[in-house]
Length: 214
Image (cartoon, rainbow, N blue to C red; front, side, top):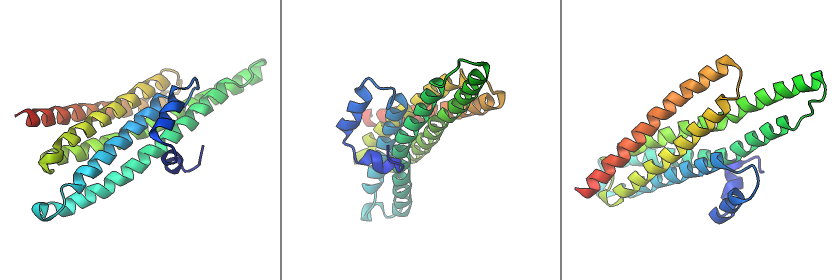
């Protein structure tokens, strides 16, 4: 993979990326798809901001421009996490593939596996953080955006929710295999924050749906 995750993924079509996901290979998998969902959510936030700029929206135009810039950063970061997740997963596979025929080899393998598992938990933690920022922006937009694109705010929060839940799944899977108590505590805190973001995402999505139905 390219060292520049965002550039590497932007060079692929969505169809090509999904073809890689569907293949019988360990990665890209759920973590990468979750990151892609977050990137799509960020793109929608940027679009909503773009449609809430102009003479009609002069009272909030400056804020919309700032949010649009932030959304572009989140989109690039989420795309980079697609590659980061793959590399972290590959490191876990490489650690498990180490020889364990002697006591020294087995000890070295255990240490390498633990280090790799801790590293594999980093991308989903970052994904939950990025998606949480997207949800916060969408929450602000829901009541202030151009009403013609309010449905896109709801779609953004639904996608961000999916990204956060994928992060929760993957953090939980790694945490169950990590033996270090401090790392487990750190990941437990990350899970709590992610759960709060997911709740917020669903609240915003429901609020958008209700506003559209009224």
